[in-house]
Length: 403
Figure (cartoon, helix red, strand yellow):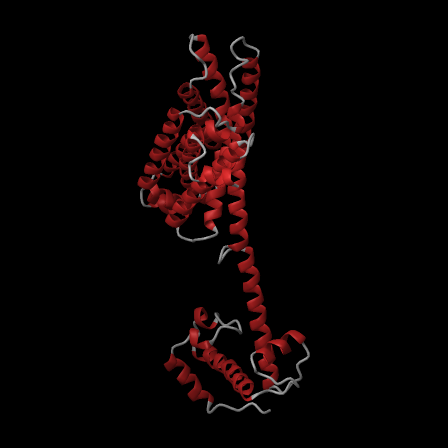
């Protein structure tokens, strides 16, 4: 526990602090970049981009070695992965546009072919004299043990550029994500905006290869955006909430990995993000499972209460134990089931509202008003006081409910 706190406070050593800061920056960039992809319902694109980077890593290593270079230069490997990812994106877009295949079929084909090619290239590299020490398999699941300051600077610079572009293009990307037809009608080039979204995802994927790997970067792109959606309905809030959730997952995951020996950073970061998702799924105030359960129970209680009051207006016996419990708890009936003064008043109000709605249907032919009646919505929430007074004038004086 002490080691974890030290890591959280950046007191666990230079490398641990560097990894934690780099992971937080990457998480923020990934969360924001993945938001519009999620809202556009194109989450699979991130999977295709990630898997398309692998052959680029292998080819870049081979080229650098053949030219007499080190082969493990991060800048060269990232350049190769970027070119390969661009080729994969272009191929997905071309297949979907030029053939009868759907986009998800094109993504599946490109994803599998590029990943297979990458695995073959890594196998070939391991057979080379200089390939045995390549360590390129770290690009699959990530590796932070050897992260240098220049690696952190690449992540920071690339992440900042991604966030800046997202901020500049947030309005057209929002329109395209929710209503591409309207966006095209007002002059927005939806194809270019889609390509911009994919390019941003490609950039985050490339800069995140070193830290979490191509397999896990997909989770870091999508999970924060999905989690943020539980907490808000506004696009800008989803965007920045997803960024903060991604940053929190990256920072806490890196600190936890640094405090425990031999714990892989990338998978831990993804597990922290998944934990935040699970908590949001359960506890979000409007969209969470617990909120849905409580809302359902409140709705059921309202139904039981109304049915019980209607039974009082008709002097019918109430047998349902839930209804009896609710009416007793609110002081509407006594322990022996006889209505109290408060219960008779509430029952009279329910009965009169039923008759008011009958008059409203006769007076108003507008179904947008009368169609809102569900038996539970108070009539005062639909009609103005003067309209309700008119209904009452047509109905006559209230009729009391007998005990």
